Image 1 (cartoon, one colour):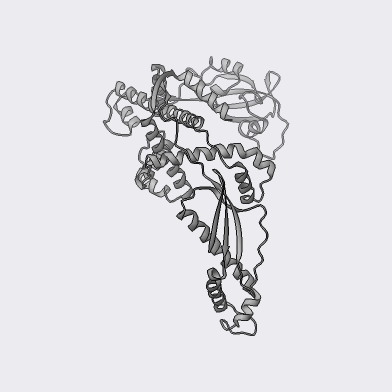
Image 2: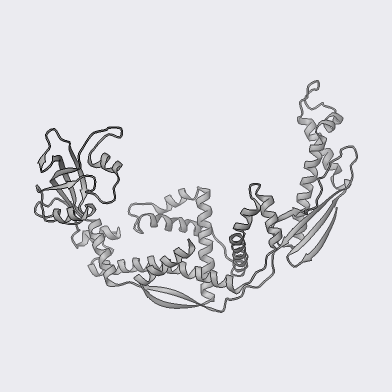
Length: 454
């Protein structure tokens, strides 16, 4: 076996590999005999086909596979032993000729490959300062969440003397002819939220009570609903049913349903925390709500900070890549990729590759390791998030272990936990400066970042 490396520049190299008969002849014979043992050809018993016949019929394909296997092993072994860090995979040089395999005359086979060499660099920018936004939670936000919690754990009541914006109305309605009920007109019944009523109708309804009547255009009474919705849910028509029905109806309020906020007592505290006696006062519940809100926004501000760290390190490390090689490799690796597609997407691809190079350096520096228990905790955090951070009656361990069997989800959580560990290590090394920001300012900032990303 003869291997020659030619260094073109710091990012490009070529390999010339010569495979001689002594490298493959015995392996080729072994493969022929293996095939002979399995072959079942007409006129011969299984395993008794003459080797010359096997060689004549299948020798070229077997030789090609043997050479290619040896070539692949040789490439991998050489790159590993020589500690050559490559990008992508070795690819045949552009002037490589088609190899013709000759089973009658076993000779030398020569192969030439281009290599894209990973750039050598030390990560710069680690001594600089990075800003982390800290959202200041206003008391109004705590109160709003507190009242929502009371409604969430409250009960349903049916008031008869007034109507409020969040009430659900049960209506019976009849078609009108002018100002009067239409003879043999359409009759229907449906439920509708007061807050979803068209503004002028809502203004009128809020002055009524159970048993009250009001006139409305059934095709516009509910905001932002199309004809299909009106026919199905308000007129109660079958999908293929066609009727000539007018616009104007008179509705009677048969029932008013309202969620009554939970009483501020120990029962409410226990329902909110999911634990009996964990909190015993409104002040403690408010403190827990504040902590939950702060944790929610802390996660988001941390993600923003991580993006700033990523952008900062990308800016601080001007990494050069073997672009021409990578474009050729992308085209050879993706049979449907055209030159136009590769050019259009190459900038995003190269930026992602550069960040992965920086990330790999830092993962090695900080010895980032993701253990099975880290992944399990990651799944448990996901599950808790599904239930608003308060999963009552759920066996988190059992559910996490079940979800971990999904390979795609396992991979996602593994990458998330690895990224979290990496950024925690980076944050501990860098100079993080906290900057207080109001919730409104933070929402505007997130909106701007999302728009830029889009």
